[in-house]
Length: 304
Image 1 (tube, rainbow, N blue to C red):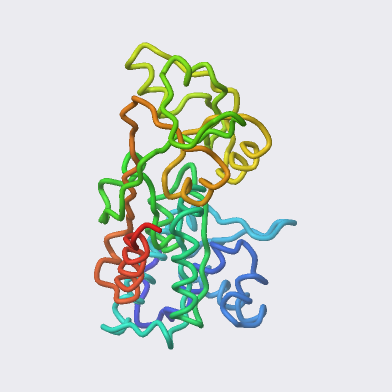
Image 2 (cartoon, rainbow, N blue to C red):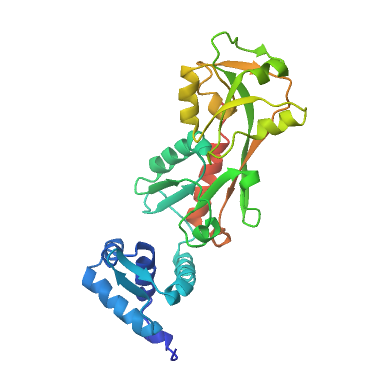
């Protein structure tokens, strides 16, 4: 590649490259950038001259990046993010700012703090947009680096220890029963507990074994798990229609205790230790600091 004078390169070309790479379509990239399609096509032509590579190849389904484009995509994104942070003001006013928040977490978090967190953002920042994303199976670090995720919230067992993080709260498990003869605050022996039909949430759908089963196994016991579902909404729906026992995080159980009996057991139950992680480049970003503090405030609201 011939030597390029950086003073002759329009940094807007990198913005166009980033949009083309993420959208895989000239038309969609133009919409994202609020430009016309011919303008973006012209920018792509100049990008090809700068990098001496096709960068994107047209197909019947849009454009696909060349190996050269794949190799530079993350660097381009990081350069643009560094520039954004460099130019960002030292203070942040959510009431007047236009921005997008992308938060990532499990079904459990969508039932507990994400609703209140989202409502708080939209109340304080009327020009904000909020995207709530499920936890991806792979590529979390890359998405954080690219700014495709602002915050990822998870139990400490799934947290990202090499990234900055903040503890939000702890949530105990409680035992609920939808059996018709169950009495609230009833104490149940382990033998009787294990004989009943159990249900639990497994987001992967690939197992009938969870944390409670590990606790029971330490006592040489096992329970009768007949149902594993991917979401708490489905679990609660099924518990309302048939007799089941489920160990549920207390923040979710509080919403449904009027429908089910809370059972006391001799087990020492595990708990969830909820943590938020983010990319270190966002440590001093005023918008991100406001976002983290808002999330912490929501997470630590008194139990109701």
